[in-house]
Length: 124
Image (tube, rainbow, N blue to C red; front, top):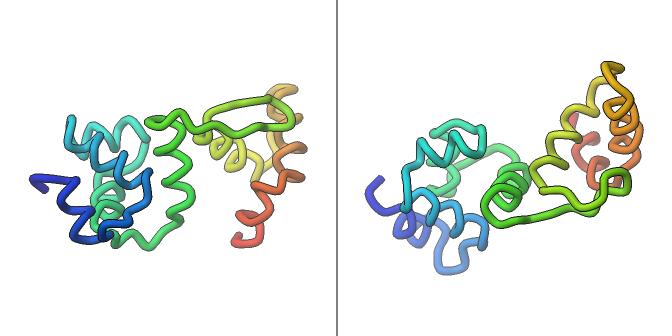
């Protein structure tokens, strides 16, 4: 892909979400591979999002992009303000109980009662 910003204009149109625009700009500044490494996702996921062909959970990708590149935060009742991608990580961890440490137990309980997590739990 030669110009990720041009690609999103072609595939998303002029009203591409701000986080998709940010993702494209980050890819243009480095590469899809480098961006994928930073967001801990695959290069094909990044490519599919830019081409508006990703069939997975775009909200999850948005949380990661906002948290890593856009300083997006979530006001967690347990931890206070934290990057949106860290909130997503805690929500994923809360799907299985783990008693490795007190924070993990506390977050398991908190995340399983959090409204941000309720939508995801219904899809499992």
